[in-house]
Image (cartoon, rainbow, N blue to C red; front, side, top):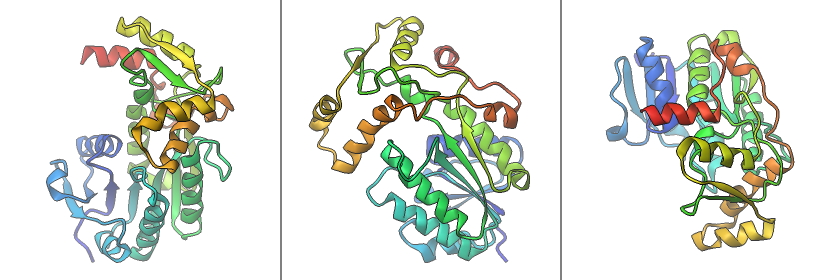
Length: 284
């Protein structure tokens, strides 16, 4: 029997997983940090770092020996990300993990306009079929992302039309995850759609950014062809270009609209708005 903590956390070297790990450490919760590089593991009380390799199912299974609950932050965007996800799920099930909390995507579906939303749906299905209990945190796009979306010329470009997005702060998602992880049985086989308190067009996002930052920001509604052309200079592979452009077309199609009460219901506080996020950032 492993003497390592029974709660395992992935992504602790990143922004979301790191925030969750810090909240849990502050609450006195022991945790096992699954990392690919020991030197990057955060130094937190009650936390022990264990090496993991998403491409090696056996190695990952060994890293998860004795773990009962796993917080699985979706892997970094990559062409083989879905296979990495399947490897982790298979390893967790084989290691005897009882409950997986997975960061999915708002409106995840096999035909989602946002191409990566399809991978999230496939991962959810793989988790459902694994025999483990699950909790899916279907995050909308992060407000943090939209706050830094304008180019150097102050223009947000993309084919989002007049569609709206109910973006949520990464901090609110982290707080939800930390609550769920401390009492996973209360959230067994539940799916939560995590949004901010409002839905905004990108034109409205630009107006708020202008008002709160003092820098003039505007939104330019590209055509889909223009969107691909304006991003061609990055020499990104086709799958990544599709993901970038479908970020906006998903908004245009209405797939990121609609607010929920899930953040409030779980954490007890209202989710932060874009304006509140910018004001908080300005004070730090």
